[in-house]
Image (cartoon, rainbow, N blue to C red; front, side, top):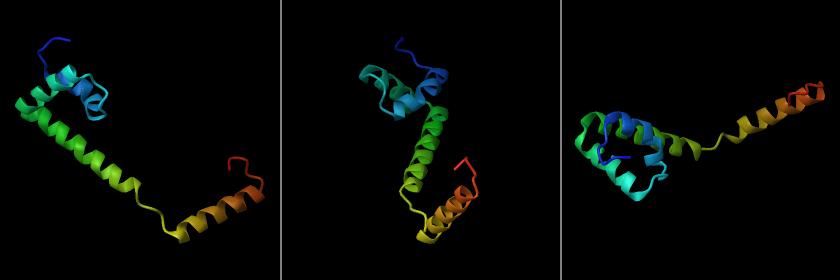
Length: 85
């Protein structure tokens, strides 16, 4: 890739940038674009916000009562011969 970076280039590599899947020079090139482009910076901020929400949501556990109800229902469906469980 060239040293120039446009919005389309950044958008097409945004997930790779956040997932640390790019080489150092490529990462630096895209970050330079982010620093100078309000539109892409806003997109990156939104992506970071979504990832933060997902990380926070993935650590929460369902209440034990819900877990028990789900397991009970699966057991009942299996006993009735439902093969999808």
